[in-house]
Length: 424
Ligand SMILES: Nc1nc2c(ncn2[C@@H]2O[C@H](COP(=O)(O)OP(=O)(O)OP(=O)(O)O)[C@@H](O)[C@H]2O)c(=O)[nH]1
Ligand SMILES: [K+]
Ligand SMILES: [Mg+2]
Image 1 (cartoon, rainbow, N blue to C red):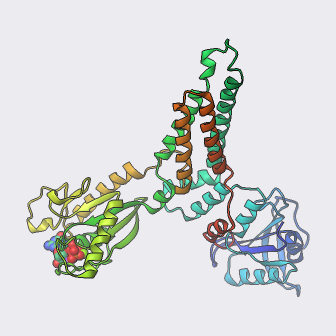
Image 2 (image 1 turned 60 degrees about the vertical axis):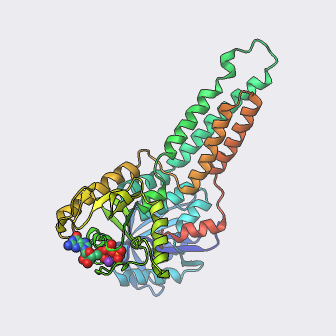
Image 3 (image 1 turned 135 degrees about the vertical axis):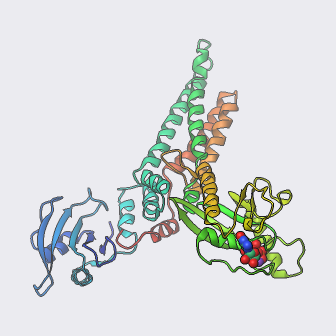
């Protein structure tokens, strides 16, 4: 158990209607009693006058006591529900700081202690971090499932099934010599492994946590002066990129993160793809535009259809200038309706590519590991020799086991808990 007892404001920045200050650690009860007098019984709220060391009242507060180890942090934990004024929070924090063994918590330190004390697993801690950052409904749902421990349960369930399948193969290997072993028993493990692999493949087909967070990558591309930056600005509703009649105005990638109707997007304006340039800077911009287009979920191509990258949405821009239409969609910065129609088109792409159709989502690192598991499972199913199948299954179980009981390095924990706000 950590030596220090920590405290922090766990609710939002004051002023607010109420402010919740949490104290966790072995001195938590003594510190709370020093301010509040006799504490209420565990888990029942009571109103107490909090007093400083000189006996002067600081606030009347609701006091809640959660003795360890059955608390959120696994340690003795006290919640003080104060009036949410700045001076109240400051005075109570100062009184707590004066208590022996107490110090202000680091960001995420309450959750870190919950992890250290086995109250939550790493998947839940990561889910909590995601939940606090969630901007959209899908992100919230995936993060909540992870913080509830659903991801851990899914992985553990697969591991149990594969252990069962491994036991079945090993039984057939042991009794191989006995001629009377039924043929259906020899292959009984196969449907179990196939079912687990199919569930994993279905989960891998879902967007990752990172993709749900970053949103649909939309790249505006095309020849110089096609109207890319103007369209970028019109989509954002602000002058984010410089627009001039001079070809080659945009040199670098300009990126904006937008959430629209609950859907996240990464919109990118790029340098016009000039056929020839002797300008070094422009050439670098063009290289960057090409590289980004290669990763795009949707390319909005403002140019000739003949030169459009494969799969791009062909946009006829400057539709007010009596260009012949012919594109998949016509837009003009002078028509708000056309911009709304383009947003609708982007939303339909997002719904297709970025909707979470499962309860849980995986991070990219977890996806890499799980792909290794599905490969080994497929290999085990391809083998005819039970010994070889058993070996592949062992590899799969080891990889999956690593994912279930993911051992966190100190650096990984620092990065994770650095994402938390103070008081969480
Ligand atoms: N009439 C009209 N003019 C437009 C429209 N969109 C862009 N323009 C004009 O077209 C010119 C070029 O626009 P930009 O947005 O800078 O074009 P770009 O593709 O970003 O150009 P580069 O960054 O140089 O490659 C500017 O003079 C804009 O005002 C439009 O919908 N209608
Ligand atoms: K331009
Ligand atoms: Mg531009």
